[in-house]
Length: 199
Image 1 (cartoon, rainbow, N blue to C red):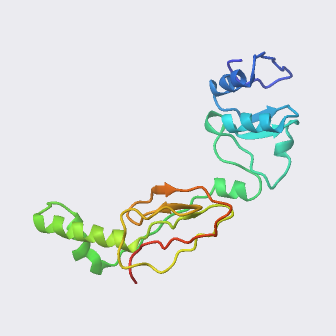
Image 2: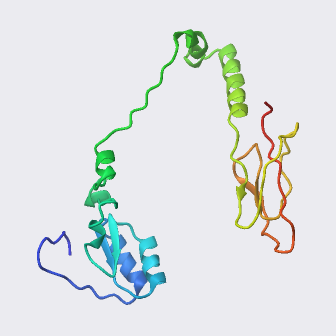
Image 3: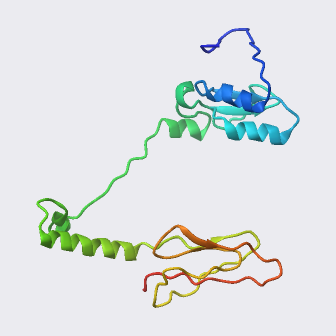
């Protein structure tokens, strides 16, 4: 069991439980395919979530390769990329990014180049503040069964918005959640107005 076997040989390795089986799999290079045989769906899902492989098939073999709409390929040492249908095209294609910078921006962009004088550092600090105001932070996530509709932006930006029923509250100053309350089945949905830049 040190190398991949291409032949009519099926080794059996006995383990005491599923954790030991997962440890055995994860201690070796990632396989091209992982086959799980069990009638317990939760057990199959735990093994799938705890391991990494190019593809997985439950209670069958090779069947995951047959559908042309499903990608097939390895991961890590078992291969790179996928093939089948559009996945073959994407594997052998490259998405190239192209940026056009007009020449009239040279006086502005030259501020980013050394030597860094006090004037340049001041201008860069001002540009970074403008950048933070132009790009807004994602709005609060909507939890199942609750409605969190953002309203018009207020004039001030609170440092820590109050917690709301069923909403993961995010402040405009930080994308990290600052409060979270579980939904109360007996209460009406509430909405939080997200602070943000003025138009």
